[in-house]
Length: 226
Image (cartoon, rainbow, N blue to C red; front, side, top):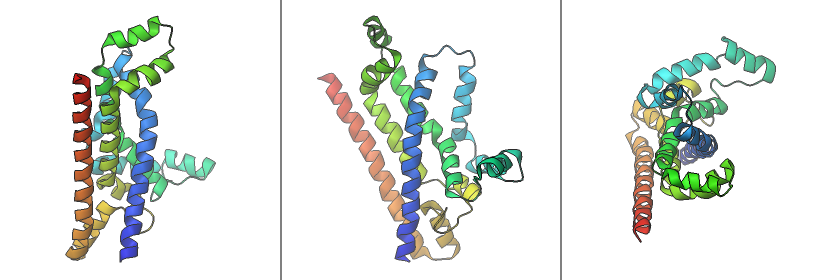
C-alpha cells in the first residue's frame, strides 16, 4: 500500500511540475500580450483563457475526452499521423491540466504586468532596449511576487485536480491515478484510514504553498517600502 501511495503522489508531482514549467513558458508571453497589446478581440481571448475558472471541470474534461478520442477527427488525426493517443494516458491528462490551469498562471502574471508603471517600459524603449530585453531584464524582475504566485498556485491547483483528470485519464493506477483520485477511490472502498492519509498530505501541502505565497508577497512589499 505504501508503494502505491508514493507512486500515486509521484504521478501527481510529476504532473504538477510539468504543468507549471510549460505554463510558465506559455504564460509569460501570453500575459504580456494581454496586458500591452491593442488587439481588438483581446477580451474574447481573455475570456477563453479564463473559462476554466467558471466552467465545471467535468464539462471541460468531457469535451477534451471527446476531442482526444480516436473516434473523432482530432484524436484520429493524432493517432493516424503521429501515433499519439491522448485519452487515458499521462500525456492526455497533462494536456488537460495545461488547459485547465492556464488562467492561474496567465492571470497572476497579467496582474503583475498591469501594476507596473507604463513609464518603466517606455524608458527601456527610449534607451534602445528590445522588447525581449525589456521583458526579461526590466519587467519580469519587477513582478517577482506575481511570478511566484502564478507558479505556486498553478502547482498547488494541479496537485488537487480531480474532474478533468478523471474524465480524460480514467484513474488508471500507475499511469493516470493521482492523489485527488486516490482519495475518492479510498472513500468509495470505505478505507477511511488511507483516504485520511492522502487527504492530510494534500491539506498540508496546499497550506504550505499558501503560507509561502503570502510570506513572499509580504517580504516584497516590505522591500519596496525601503
